[in-house]
Image (cartoon, rainbow, N blue to C red; front, side, top):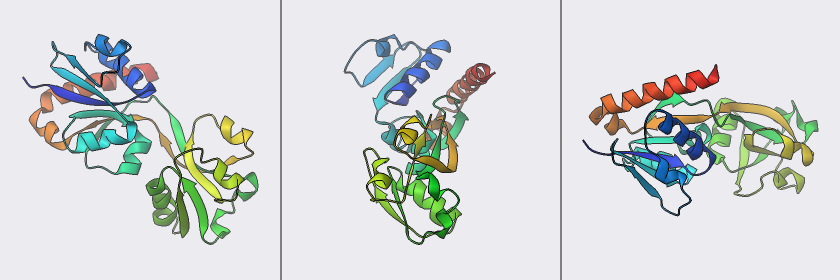
Length: 215
């Protein structure tokens, strides 16, 4: 039996995913220890876990370096990789939103060449150009996108909103909701053919655990 490799997005998502893996009988004790290691092995269940940057998870899965990935829906939408999205895990819930000064609410369609700053240029482009048919100027930022409207770099931002506290503190507001987000269980398409039984057993176990926690 070959090893199944799982790519986990570093940080909170990895920790929450690990808890589920442990609850379905996987040995993640090595990962729970403070370590700089990036690859962890569960010999008994023939599983490998790799810790990678969230934006790289879909790449590892699409190219087969990982059979399975746990990653946020925001990353899947931005990366648009060719893989199977199997389970909405229900944790890491937040929203992708268009945010800006409150006085712009309901007026975005009136602005020609709307300037949009975002860490997620593909999501922003798809939402405004493909869904709304609006021409926009996208400015890619990697840091605090909230600064964009405050210093005149952009009219609005497209970003993840959890509580909205940072927006409020900077005099900004949610203007439009693009889509809800949460962690997803994704699978490589070839792995699904080769290891269908093992992967589907895991998918079903994850579905039971996430449904149980959602109730």
